[in-house]
Length: 211
Image (tube, rainbow, N blue to C red; front, side):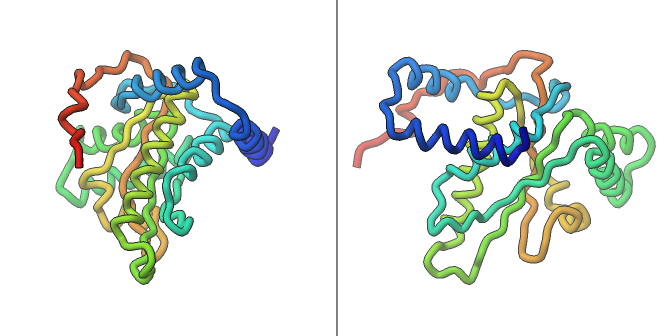
């Protein structure tokens, strides 16, 4: 079954399911999965990574984020196999431009190769759109990242969103971006080789208030 067929089937199931009442058990399980998602470092990720069909489902989940005027101000670029080798060369080049040598360059290379799948997150913000301001478009991008990570968790994988100085590097950015786009960073994805380390319980009252 092709990725397109899988998406069509899943999307069809979602539409059909939306016309029915979601059971209490299903709601409880969905909430449990949402509340048990934690980021796991790429060094603790291994094979297998998500398949083409699963990545299509992840993309579909990302497209369910709130999106004023349906602008879709983001896209994903998947690196696997040879793609990871190209990413590694970009990181090594970054290291050289910043004076790194020897083992430090080996570390740069390893940084790109730890997870079996790396998904670059590209923002494409339309500054000329007067109906949807920049902050709303960026909010959509953030929601897409969150939905993608949650979908990966539900599918049985682990991941972490990473950005930092390499994402801001112009040479690396040009390797991923078209005109007017911004590289935000990468979602490293794979199967967890170690349990997640929760951040600890945070009192919801810290972020809740009445108007």
